[in-house]
Length: 125
Image 1 (cartoon, rainbow, N blue to C red):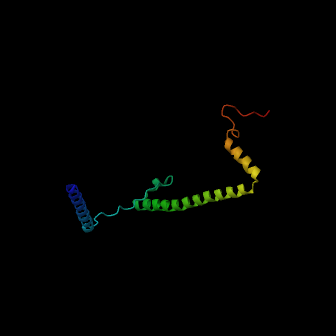
Image 2: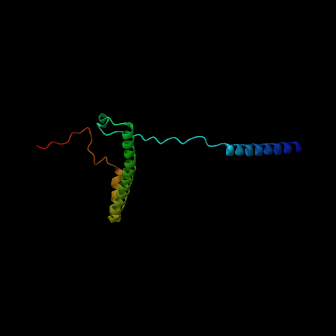
Image 3: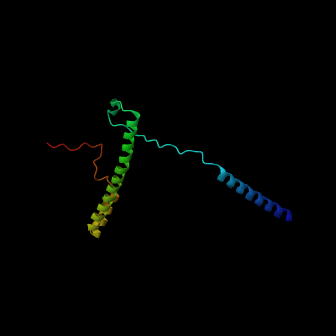
């Protein structure tokens, strides 16, 4: 029994020494890894390849595209949020009976509202 306790204590001590040496080694190592340069990729508008743009111009155009993508994505999210808000306000106008009827209609899906593809539309004569 005493042998087991000594063995456990030795393992714990060895683990503590290993962790201490490891953390000191990490502290002493200089950070030699340079951060990767930011590579901006994009696409040129139609026919712009034919203009003979140099690398600097292409990079500037790609950066402009990236900058405006962030802005347009933010506007798209804002529009989506406004549509959700609009629908909620419109739903608030309905009576309880209309809300129940709307849920019933929506639960059926669009099967009733879309014409089937097999049938041709009726022709006016």
